[in-house]
Amino acid sequence: MAGGILGIATSGLIAAQRGLATTGHNIANVNTDGYSRQRTEQVERLPSYTGAGYIGNGVDVGSVTRAYDNFLNAQLRNTLSAHGELETHHRLASQVDNFLADPDTGLSPSLQAFFDSVQDVVNDPTSIAARRVMLTEGETLARRFNALNGRMDALRSQVNQSLGTNIEEINGLAGNIAALNERIVVAYGQAGKPPNDLLDQRGVLAQQLAQKVGTSLFEQKDGALNVFIGNGQALVIGTTANRLSLENSAYDPGQKDIAISASGSETVVVTDAIGGGEIGGLLRFESQVLDPAQNAMGRIAAGFATTFNARHSAGSDLNGNAGTDFFSDVTNPAIGQYSWFGKQTNNGDAVLSVAFDNGVVTGAADLTASDYRLDYDGSQYTLTRLSDDAQFTNAAGSFTVDGLTIGIESGSAAPNDSFLIRPFRRMAGDLNVTLTEPRQIAAAGSPFAGPGDNTNARALADLQTAPLLLGGKAGYQDAYGEIVGDVGTLTRSAEIDSTAQKQLLDHAREARDSVSGVNLDEEAANLLRYQQAYQAAAQLIPVLNTLFDALIGAVRR
Image: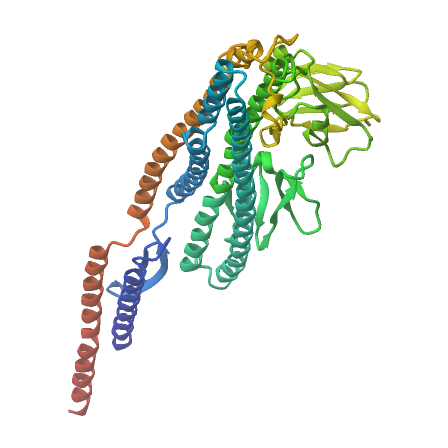
């Protein structure tokens, strides 16, 4: 009996002690990110049979478990990923919105000032001062186009830099998850019990990873966690972490692609498959805001330069000479040097020609702010307008579409060759004034009717409101206003989505913490409960001593 009582007392002391230790561990980690509250699971020992029946033998601590809900934690990771994407998208889109709509940095004030100076020449075509102001305002307008394009180029560089930084962080997190997988598998194998603190640490890494990129998780029977991205590409398998890398695009070396590579296997581009997290926000901003806005700015620059130059060249300058281009001819076929890119895997030697339609006014109206892809399958060419995936096919490889003429200038394409065509990406950055003297401004008509003739100047001034762009439905200001409106709408939508997602994230955290978080009041009650249990179990030991003393005394008598 004495041994039974001692065993029961000892088991009670140990159970209470481990309960106190677990409670203290919870209290110590009350502010630890990702910590899941732990509790001891006590189970009664198997009883011993006596003639009078079964008598208990005390208590065991079956396991130490953590308060963890798979659904709530998956919900938290998903909302972290969605918020990371939307917040990044909104933050970058708002930058474009701000500098396009800002009266100090936007295009509208410079356009207005330029056409005001044209009107001054209309009012006094013989004034050298008015002509000089027109040249100056033209240069200011060109620089404004250049500056806006430069801001967008800078944002593109920022996106690429952020992609590289995030990819390095993702690789680090993946490596740490793989290392923890190894420790968790060993711990499971040795004890057969869950290593709660290691699991929490891995859970925090999984949350941090979700903030960077959308993920799918699968836990193996041995406790290892597999992580997948995109369309099921494995980032972590057991104790092995694959690596992401930032590669030059298959077409444009200035564009970056995200690729994944595993040891002993080739690199696979996953850019189009990835979404969620900061990576998803960067890619979404680039495809939905930056690319369309920069192309649209280039389209305005092209339309403005071609129509203004065409009208200016139709007049006569102050010396009676025929007018020339006022602005640089950004639509010159020489743009083909940078407006198209052959895929790196091409086997042919085809050189493309990308030129603007000869009908200046009609061509400018037809321009669309889109990129194009030209594919050759060995028998025919297919031109795809990437903004809406509209396709045009023929066997000769020559296309006149959207105010552009695209064709094979020299060489020949091999089967499966592909080309990316970006007619407008750099045009706003290449605009400048070509005239050097005020007298070169062609204010007079043709034939020349004298220095006081303002016929062509009036026609130039009328261009300000003429519907020359967007299918003949918008002037220069209207076309720019459409860009500002589109970007503003996208930015506002991103702001609303980001704010709503932040609220969902807060709710997801609260839901997770309601199950897994540490409640200090509850832990204080547990401390008291385990303290009382410990004290009560300890009282069995002096009772046992009294019984021994009584037994020994009886024997001596």
